[in-house]
Image 1 (cartoon, rainbow, N blue to C red):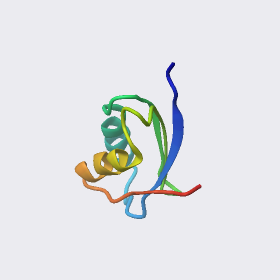
Image 2 (cartoon, helix red, strand yellow; image 1 turned 120 degrees about the horizontal axis):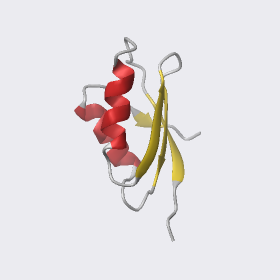
Image 3 (tube, rainbow, N blue to C red; image 1 turned 180 degrees about the vertical axis):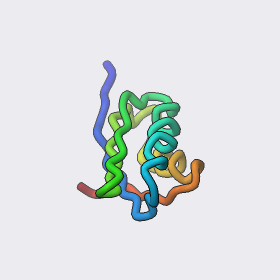
Length: 75
């Protein structure tokens, strides 16, 4: 049985709208990620994923790999 969960990441250093596709592409390339949406204005990143395939920390690392800081948001 597949289980997906929604993880919210926060980033405070999104400086231009061109950041959005870079981050969404990096997150979507991770195993088990079914969707990734970056809200540029709020710095909120919503990711639907299977936590057994990709953890929240791995999502943060994927964002960092394309040059941005992020953290898992408790809500």
